[in-house]
Image 1 (spheres, rainbow, N blue to C red):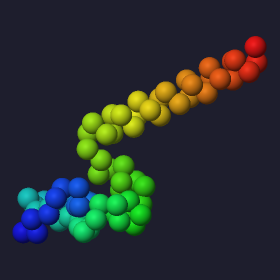
Image 2: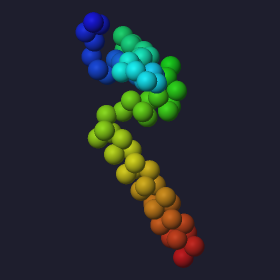
Image 3: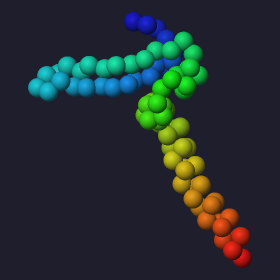
Image 4: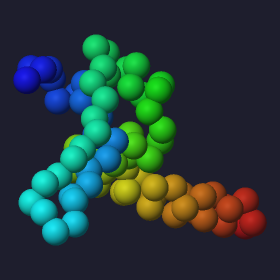
Length: 77
C-alpha cells in the first residue's frame, strides 16, 4: 500500500456497515508527523496516541489537581 511509518498515519473514522462484514475507514497520511499535530483536532490526536502515551497523559492529568490542592493548602497556611 503506502508503506509509511505508523507515526505519519492518523485514523479519522472507522465504520462497520450494518449487516455486513465490511468496514470503511478514513485515515490521513502526512509526510511529517509534526504537521498532523497542527492540522488534526485534539480529539483525533488523543484517539491516535499509543497506549503507553495515553496512560502517561491520564496520570499527568490526575497529578495536576493534587498538585494544585497542595499548593492552595500551602498558601492558606
